[in-house]
Image (cartoon, rainbow, N blue to C red):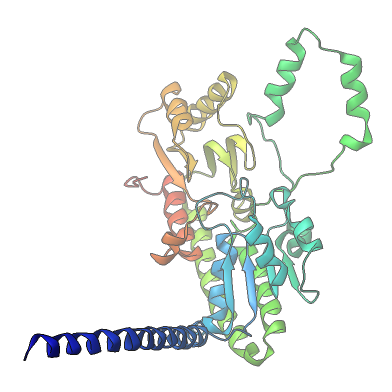
Length: 373
């Protein structure tokens, strides 16, 4: 082939490429667009029925109860747990996305205590006017227990009042006026840790199941059957707790920590002492508190000082060191206030945690000594 023929061939190839390349690019763009649309459609169908009821829960026990009521067919509903990153009930604040999720949900389950004051505003602006709201405190009614400050327990206001009395600008008359103001009377505070009672759990699950079958009546019998099976497990574990308490050599728990287990001790007629109330913001115990608790360890010859999940155990260790007792264990109870999504994936459940708490209770009441915190 001569030079002129080669040039002609190169020219035709160049022109052909200039014509074909845009066509190929256009075809590729159309293919991507069609694939993208197809992929979105498939994803939509794979994520379940978009018309399934949306159930929003604030804390782990509520979430786990819902999942047990749904049973082997969780696709019948979409379930959201808001507090799934380890932040406990007292510190949780919803994001804007959380508020939007609540606004559109069909069933909303929350505790209803002091820590849930943000809920009123969220529900006021809800877009779903037919939403069923389950307030656990309201469900319990008269079974809800008032927060109490037992002997030796450090009140949140103790330090504040002490500082006021020593302040240079302290005005007794002004304090007296403020105390008499009706605006400062917020009424009684109830213990919001209602889930830490197996007996409460059965009552609360009844209301949750009723709400679920109301928004999904087609599967009502399935939910009823699942609920009954789950309540049998709750009752069986409750009986084991009763047996433990009835056979234990001790009937008193001592917490060098906050005390969220009021409902559990009420269920089994146990006595208790603690550094702080369950919802206390305090983390440093006074000398008087340490002295009182260590004195009780000695007086009652208690085998253990208890702490809760998230505690560094410093107060408990100090109480033990301040006592004259030997072989006192530190026993950790789990209040389920900071369960994470990863822990749920790894199989943590309400019943498994309450099983672990039973083991802790057995040690704290002197039934076993091989407990490892």
